[in-house]
Length: 260
Image 1 (cartoon, one colour):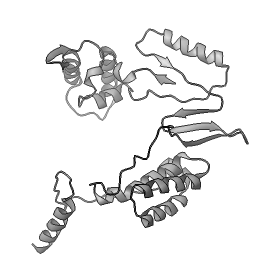
Image 2 (cartoon, one colour):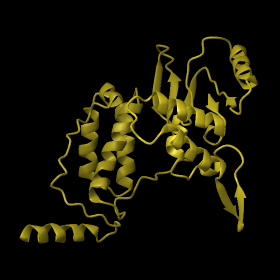
Image 3 (cartoon, rainbow, N blue to C red):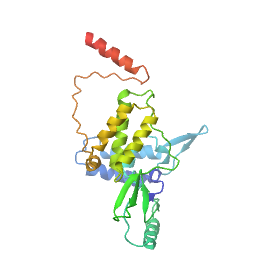
Image 4 (cartoon, one colour):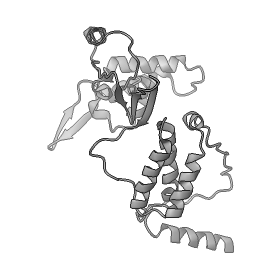
């Protein structure tokens, strides 16, 4: 089930009320007075404007034109704006499901629902959920459009080396996490895609063997990595725009600092 245009359909008063409730219920909040924050939020919402063909327009309703505003990410989260895709199993008749959606859309609100149903398989986000005809269990696989092409980052791209070397690992872990059957076949396909994009065969083969040893349950729970907190007190940060010369700059700086 999808919520039609939920990202752009937050009534101002409802959004302000959701923010008020969230801040009031947070006993750990130690920031500015709540009413002061809400007054700033109200000003942004009701005084937001946009430019079109050298003319300025005042936005009168909803959040469509603050999508690029720094406020929107937090504001949308307070209103649960990101929850616009729903997946559930329906044990009633198709007619009852249609009636349910019709009833939901009769509720006085700017939110409208659409539903997609299939007794055999259905796509949800980047996963296809399908019914195994052998045992009647639900299985999952990576959803791929018929028009999909190999758009993986090319190995010769001007990106940090550690990013290029970590990409096969993250994508093959994704295969293990989202694929309940035929994992080896799907990993082989992913490996082929990386080879076509110029990745070293040794890197791809080693990553594939690592992925085949993973426990799928652990990847779903996120237990494959145990991050160790880094002590950055003695770290000097140097921030710059990345280009092909960045590794040379890094090596030169590390060498020079070592000589001091």
